[in-house]
Image (cartoon, rainbow, N blue to C red; front, side, top):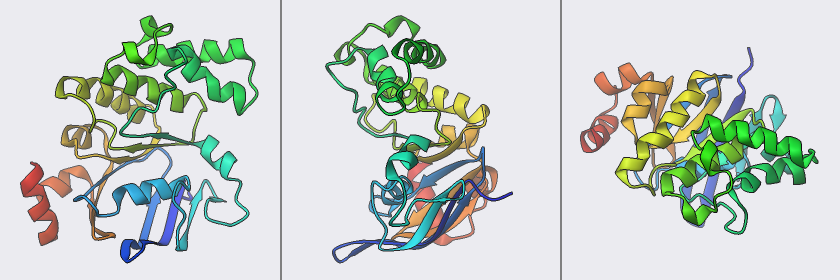
Length: 243
């Protein structure tokens, strides 16, 4: 079966800094791939390239057979198919929780507003926030805001979910509530690319771990192999600092 996400020879530079150096990566439907590595290794650039928040200098990316990198690609359609959750929650402060979630289906997909709100309530229940639909973002904790951001991304029924260090801005006690939602998504078969150093999530939900350094994939393996018997010395040195 063809991969849902296919990245071939991806190259990206920012001035003299080569962020991606010929990355090849395929992700199957329903697979959860965790990307780890030191700061500046290219993790976030790779993730942002998947929905073309960053353009490649060369190489190609496709999602479900549709090119992301072709000049004629329908970027708006691609972003409808790919949900993304960032470090910062990016909720609209002037909209209630339920309106934050229902906005994109109404504006982008022209859904009926009441239907969008019914779907939004279902998603709020999914992330454990049914009682917060009328709240304003500023009234929520960081973990609650991030769970609303996940619900908002899911409202477009994406084929793929991208998570760029979704817990890095959270207090430690709020991290688990976000990771629990992500783990449930993984169990339901959502295809996910996750940049994170949360090793508990890696062991619980990831099918494969990618270790990047200096814009390259140094090593990839299932969690049980990656943590117990990494092949590369660079991987072993990195793991010594995070485990």
